[in-house]
Image (cartoon, rainbow, N blue to C red):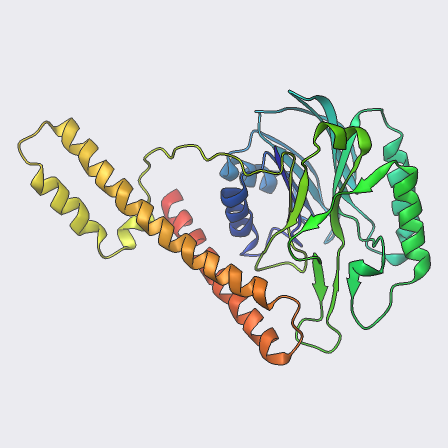
Length: 341
């Protein structure tokens, strides 16, 4: 099982949904937790349907802030245990028995850090199920979680660490780029912090000893998505069924492929002819998708290589690479809208 968590900073942004679709395609999560959706239930149901997820529970945003959403697939038996403006609690039943997944969003205001710690302790006392909690904690465990010009107050480190210990939680190590939030890109005030993480009780770690958390790339939001893989291994890909895509009509070589295949098979039964054409299109489309994915992968590799550099040239290159990735995702979203008409 994979669980994706992301502070998307509003699903109304043009790139928000295409980014989630791309993350879902690549990482195939069984559960998705989104915070700061700035959206209401109807919008989130639409996104759930596009992702082909089965269940969805959301907490509406209040004005122009907040909003949470948890989506899941029916391959796991999930039920809601509780919720607030800062969390959604899910009970999951699978081969490992019953365990608990909490999507968490800590209070962003520094003046409310103690409220976050109180909420964590309250959630820890809800039941005795093995517990995994993932999300944007808006808190730091130690000085290594921050890189920037202004030091983080020690009382905040201490308060969060004590709350985590009181809850019986331990941090699941992060693979990939070590910081999940950044601010002030391109300026002297550039700062990076690890605000997003996964933590679990020892009983949960015993159920999933190979669990790992990785930071991912996204062209929008100042938060990076994170993916938790319970088994530490990628999910197997299922075969694709043939489905015609309107975007193929925009490719110059597509009419020739169809015409040549149809002409060369004259004289055979119409059903066999159609199947042969669909097979030819499938092979061609597979190469097309491979090229598109290779392009995305190259851009993401450039972004990953530029992360952490603070010189002005690297920062401009990073912004340019993010723009390229954004343009690719927006083009795919435009194709989807044409197909949906």
